[in-house]
Each structure stands twice: as C-alpha cells, then as structure tokens.
Length: 209
Image (cartoon, rainbow, N blue to C red; front, side, top):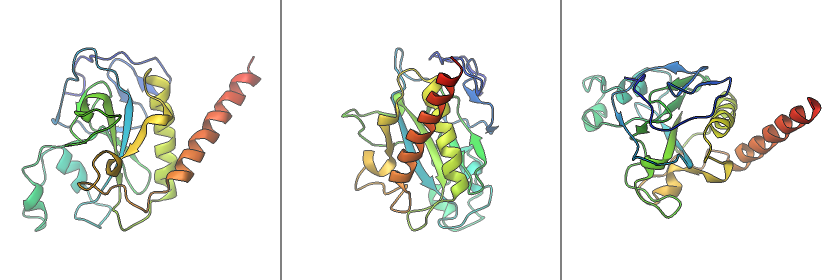
C-alpha cells in the first residue's frame, strides 16, 4: 500500500524517493492506517510525538505492531485498551536512532487526533507525524535527536511549504488532552541544532560556488 499514487508533489532530493514518498534511510513498515490528503492540500507542519509500549518500556516491536493493527492484546494488560485503535504516524524513531517509516509523506497518517495547529483543525490533513520512542517522564537519546534533526532537514528540503518555524509537539496542538513529547524533550537544543545544520549546509553551498 505504500506505493499508492501520491497526491502531493515532493521536490527531488538525494534522500527521498519523490514518487513513492519514502525516505531512503528509513526501514519501511507499511501501515494500513492512512488515506489521501484533501485535494490541493499542502503539507505545512511537522508534529513531534512520543510513544512507548507498554508505557515506559522500550526496545520491543509493539509500537510497530500497534501502527500496523497487529498488536496482540494478550501480550500485556494495557494492550487490551488500545488494540482496537486505528492510528499511525509517518515516522518512528527508536531509542537507537533507527528510523522507521509507516506512511508515505504525501499521504495522511492518523496521528494528531482532535487538535488545533496554526489556528486550523483537521491537523492530519496538512502535517507530518514523527513518533519518538519515549514517554513524558523520560529524556530522549542523543541518537534520536540526531535522526530527528536529519529527518527534519530532509523533509524541509523536499516539502515546499514546510519550514522549521512550524514544528510542534503533540502537547502544543492538543493541550490538556496530550502531553507528549513532554518535558524531557529538549526543544531549545533541537531548534539550535536545526539552525546550525542549516548554516552548515549554506556554508557548503557557498564554498561550491
């Protein structure tokens, strides 16, 4: 299903297959939980989430199973509460920094729920969802930040309407309902690293002139 015909045109970059909407460094795990974005819709926001299954435990395959509707509710008592949910994100970053892609960039993943972003509802229509393996009570690994920074730069380069000014946490677009990625996510360091990466790229471009 990840090869479905895209509805949004991506710019051609070395890191992305623009036709399939896949990041080449990501391990593809196709999720059935996606559909088309509305006709004419632009991708304008990136939403950072955090998830761990079971809550607070890391390293298993449960998140991938959850996003692919393959979670066995008998594996853990908590799974019975969420087994019937149909959700997904475009990307998932393991604690090791490994990048997984569930949904093509051009398609609408089901990650934001009832939210408001940029004074607009239906946030899934115009956003990309990235899940970090983690929880509100924990910090995140250096490898995860490195992958997130690289992925963000790749997406900004490939998606014409996406900028670093429109990156939000799930907690920002659904306050009171969601709290992720939580206080353990270092927003200042993430944004500073993004700016530094941008400057490095600009310097390389100048040197090549």
